[in-house]
Length: 119
Image (cartoon, rainbow, N blue to C red; front, side, top):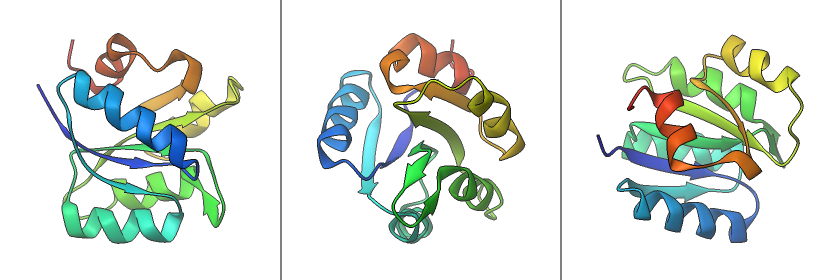
């Protein structure tokens, strides 16, 4: 099922790539953010179904973003991502309320669908 998605990453080139991939996979990217503050503001304005959130942001942690987004009155499903494939991120993502964690190199339609329970 297509989802509305907010892409949160401090790298504009990655945000553009993620937007293209997600759109190709049938999702509607409703916004982008490069910081924790922008992510929280955009989420409360756009109410996306899903947020694809980088673990490392210039003003804080993607884990903190996940905790905040999943605690909203209308919770956002969060998938945390990183260029670092540290296995500890998987358990930390779940503790932060996220659907899961994916290294950016493993971001595929199937992997995302698996985390979101859409397969």
